[in-house]
Image 1 (cartoon, rainbow over the protein chains, first blue to last red):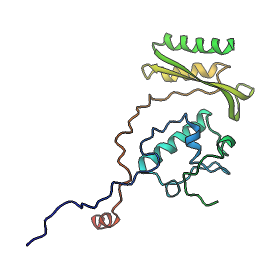
Image 2 (image 1 turned 45 degrees about the horizontal axis):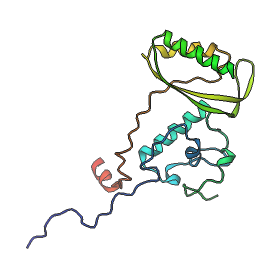
Image 3 (image 1 turned 180 degrees about the horizontal axis):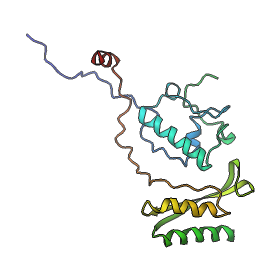
Image 4 (image 1 turned 90 degrees about the vertical axis):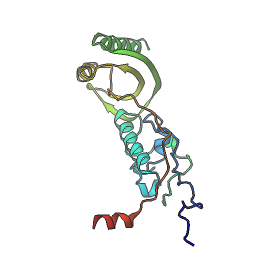
Amino acid sequence: FQPIQMENPYKEPPKRCVLCGINVDYKNVQLLSQFVSPHTGCIYGRHITGLCNKKQKEVTKAIKRAHIFGFMPVMYKNPSFLTDPKICNVKY
Amino acid sequence: KPETAAVLKRTVEALMERGAIVRNLENLGERSLPYKISKHNERHRRGGYFLIDLEAPPSIVSTMMDHLGRDIDVIRRAFIKYPVSKTEECSGIIPVNNEDKLIAKK
């Protein structure tokens, strides 16, 4: 008897990242500030945020846009957003 | 406040003059800027944010940027493509097969 070829029945659904259904906009500064360091204001990389390719690119572009248009501070994180829940696995 | 109304009226009229169709005008509120911006020999700390939905030929962009740059009351100007929101195809993180990539390159 030959083994029947079939798709892996125990396959898990693909892992979704944090932003997987959410539309990223340069206007919601609170969401974008969650991916920025509070001390220097630099954008966290993919290994820290854990986002998929597309979303990381979108977030980076939105953050740069927000910087230029004057929505988000560049060198630090807006102090009113400092108590937001932690999304990225940063070790301070 | 009447000054901001006058600025908006000026810009919208300038846009209509060059043949742009204004769909919507949103006020994103007046807040203190994230950093002090110096423009036209003045250091600004507070500003009003406005968003105009436009339909216009792309040749307008350079002329409008010029026009808005000469306006003293406008601190920062920008044009963006209308954001097409399509997030229903997000299929999650696809695990990358590194071994296959190595073999294929060889």
